[in-house]
Length: 336
Image (cartoon, rainbow, N blue to C red; front, side):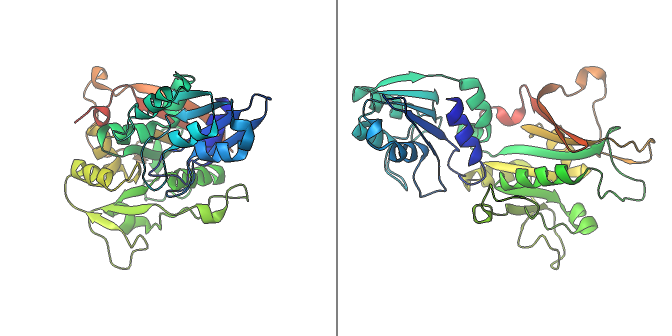
């Protein structure tokens, strides 16, 4: 299952709105064949692994991070491919919460006499597939709030200058995060001040990921912006943010990346709409209260009201740190 998780991670940027899934076929002779989900309309991970295994699939065990589909969409049911290949045992990481799958894949395999085990490495896979699982369970995209700051939590000098607080490696990683997102959102003030293009131009940096597999996310601006702004074409949104999340979810936006500015960050945070915080921290100190902070707006009035989550990952990027945090229970995670 560890190999299947690795295979899924390698295709994270190209499968949406389908889940990024990895599969491994272990033949009776000990052979290994790996597959991962392709872009929409192309074979799923299970079919890729079975094709790579060939005749070794007969009597084999297939490991897959997510329950195999049992319906005909852009491709045929993976369950039927597994049964036809003669696989004797299937090990599933997690059940698929999508209503059109929802345990029917597991049931179909068992009806055909295939032994099925469910729940192997489920915690790791739930984390890996968190945006997909959230989208299917709530109908809304997984919201990632990306922030970049100095060690004392400041984002810009008093004169507004801010490029670049963090270094090259952090910037490359943030562009990878953009590539994994279906849409990216900023405020109109950020567009007027910085005129960003919001592309993935700095990622990938080598040939490990073909450029043809990478596309820029949809661009969304809270408010209206000049017609000459580089962010165009974009959706200029002036209605309540929860309505935007509902609309994006219905349009198969699985992950929304929010980049700011400070007012936009505050509006998402204060409303409990953030699922994951990604903070790039630089070894820099502005050293005063006149520099600009991560959020603009009223904060917690008392220590008892301070938002508290959990740190799920910390990694070093050049001279900077990337800190990932999630809310233990966020409003965005509650069924509507």
